[in-house]
Length: 108
Picture 1 (tube, rainbow, N blue to C red):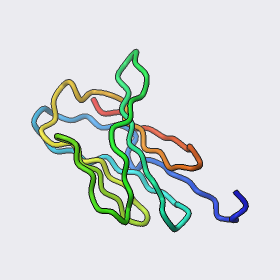
Picture 2: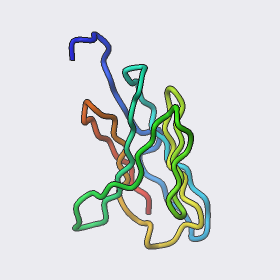
Picture 3: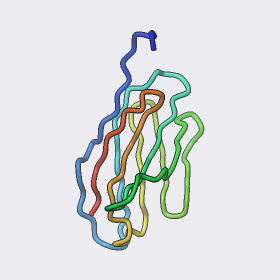
Picture 4: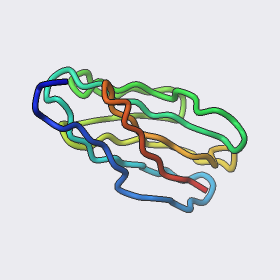
């Protein structure tokens, strides 16, 4: 607050249809505070609450959890899902804190 720079985040794709056993990249373009940004990927299954998938610090390199890898530079944050499966069908949110701005894209 009060720093004069508007922070925002938005998806580069709205929804994607993917076949099983592929690698897919979901991307969001963001404008952060310029220092120490923290980016979040959430996943929400139908009828469930969103769950935190990965937290990304652009200066720290990629974050990896099983088949999910998140990377970021100064303007784009990616979520790379390898060996996709039907069980990956969900709503994926990218979020930028501290603004708590969230946006989403659907993978099915």
